[in-house]
Image 1 (cartoon, rainbow, N blue to C red):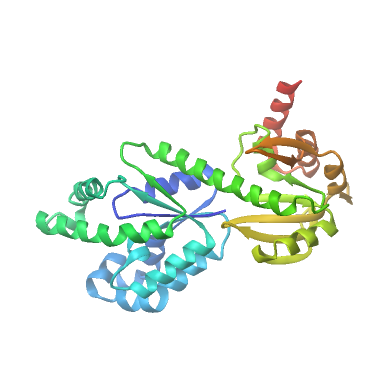
Image 2 (cartoon, rainbow, N blue to C red):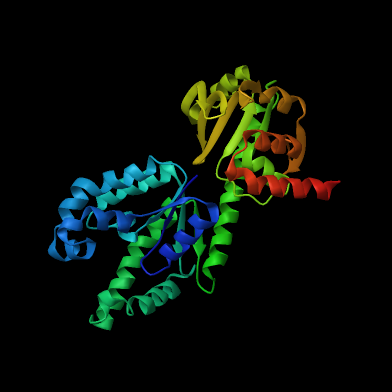
Length: 339
């Protein structure tokens, strides 16, 4: 999962981004930190801005550094308002917005829905920042108003979701973002369900989404669809407009499958045909049993095929990975509740 958090300066992006990354167990990146590191020889970001050397950096290197982040997986990017909506470097900002929109779920943070209240909120925060301590307050207010006015429309046009932060604690904001992201993932499942309806393809939801739909407290980062080899090729053909990696056999540690990858509404979907696990040195086709012992869950008006908890539990135990111990305990507890 790739999430971009952006918004005007002083809205609280960094606090929310770090907390969200920790909550979802994703990596945290900051466009300001990336710039700070790249401009170390010039004395850092602030000094480069004051000396004017920032201009060469933005025109030559800044976009590529941001683009390199979007080539990674599973992160939250704290994207500065300047990188997102610079008037002076409009072309570079346009490229950054395009990159964010095409490769991540973009969450915009605003103080209020009301523009006037937002400007007053940001002004009160800005005047306390060390950068503006000695600036005439009327000039600062004019600057905040001008910056916000140009920023507001770009944010509305480019973000998947807008979250207003006033009177909310950071953990409340993160909870709201989690809900919005989860809604987006469910919308992707609805698209897949609709596209595959009546196509005579056996498929089942696996991984964290299957666990989540059965009441297990896990973070859903992407979607796993388990099928057979033939189904993997058919699904990727039906959803070819969303395909980012064609189906080919992939083996990693003790799991293997005919893996194809899709991107639907900026959500990664792994299509795994003949999904197999290495157990006691031998490859065992897990897909056959999962497609045979499928369970159905009513959700969002749909009847979604999911992997039973017992099969999840069996797989995690067979793989013997330390990172799965928490999931094993949660699944065992849930199964005991059922019976």
